[in-house]
Amino acid sequence: MIRCAQQDPSEARSRVAAPSQYRHIVAAWLVHAYTASGVVLAFLMFIAVMEGDTVRALWLFLISMLVDGTDGMLARWVQVKRHVPWFDGALLDNIVDYITYAFMPMILLWSAGYLGEGTSATVLAVIPLLASAYQFCRADAKTDDHLFLGFPSYWNIAAFYVVVLDLEPVAVTVVLLVCAVLVFVPVGYVYPSRTSTLQGLTLALTCLWLVGYGVLVAQLPDPSPVWLAITVAYVVYYVALSLYLTARRSRTAPAVA
Image (cartoon, rainbow, N blue to C red; front, side, top):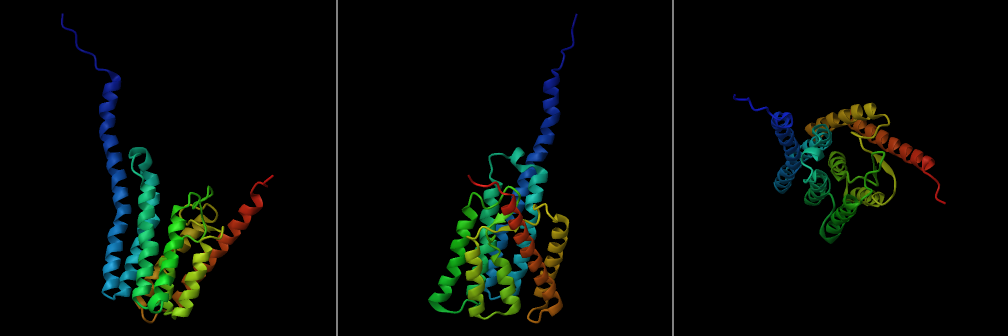
């Protein structure tokens, strides 16, 4: 008598699960590739700067901010750490952010003459780069309640306003030095996609600011005062909320014996 072989249920489940697991792994790698596209954008920024096309560089800054603002949400949704645990996506993100948020903005400002000329311009460009190198290597750069500790190296945004306002080297020097000092001041800055307090409002205003950024770049060299005021109002809101959250953290922090 011939008996039919019984299939091991666990083996059947593993065969069914395998295609799904492969899809998750592919999705995780696609998210990492999306983050890595920032390196390509940085190279295109460099080309634009070397060709003297400041406006094109600013458009590329905007695209890089859109990528940076969405890749983290995609990574958490796809659960990249679970499906590709041996690849450090956070490190990749920091590398890309340093190049696009710190290095390339300083190259732009230096090349376009906004930092002045000679040795003083070189030194002024290097100071934010060193401050950001420290910031990106801090183990506590992001707090448990999802704030950036210290000025979060938004040098691309500083460069944007320098160009839009066509600031003189003296004013640019003050802005960069103040921001460099703020890297070391323990103020918590809003992480728009993760800070829970007023998150819906913050995200909506951030989107409006991004629209305003695009409008102002499209209008260069004669940006609209109305759109400029709208974008500056967002910066004021961002700083005010950051200071409020910092004050609240200091009130609720446990006392040190």
